[in-house]
Length: 337
Image (cartoon, rainbow, N blue to C red; front, side):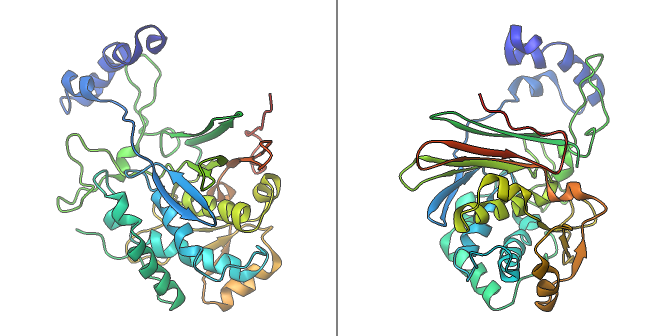
């Protein structure tokens, strides 16, 4: 109600802001709340599989989607997603780009450098040589909601999260508003580019995506919850849509792989080689095929939420819309008006 009647200033300058200052115990001031704002930013983008892919720039990890897709399009990726090589090459592409995330992701990261063609080509050469890196030493769940929408001219990819269930478990005053826990992305190492400091924004996992044709027409809008797994799930969705020609319903119903860590936000723990977790209904050839290619394969039976709750809307060449909502949860829906 405060936002509806008084806008942003009524929110941070009203009851919520007062409660926030009370929780802060001097760590920040009314002046800090006065200058906090959302920014319009230039999206990150690459060309892959004959289309242009888009996402938000750092401090989001969304660039991992773009980098992995750019690496994968230069590999011998089968058009049959039941082939174990299809999963293998996408896993290796995701691992090649993700392993550097702890050392490079911050709000000051230059996305042009992260997606620079020479860097992508170098990562692809490492994948082809079987030299996918283990996450180098650092320089020193139910909490996320995704939705997408499309009409005859506009597509929207929207994601929000409080991180780790109920966020920080702190509530601002009597408002009942929980504070998020995205500060978990900060480093306390003074030498790290994402070190906690005034005015900085933490690295985060939220990775909404859009696809356009090379001449600028809307092609698809997609995304998922899933912590560190978000870029991996979206990568598989993009490959199925753009490289394999599958429908949204086929894509969302298909079995997924995810690289897993000690928890949903620790896949790229330094020195950790993430095992490949497979959903029970993945293609029959994947488990043995991936194991024979050197992957440490395990099942994903105990926590299926790790494989994401995704949604996808495709804009077909005739302008018609085709969409699907995640079948892995009863809390998702697709609506046509």
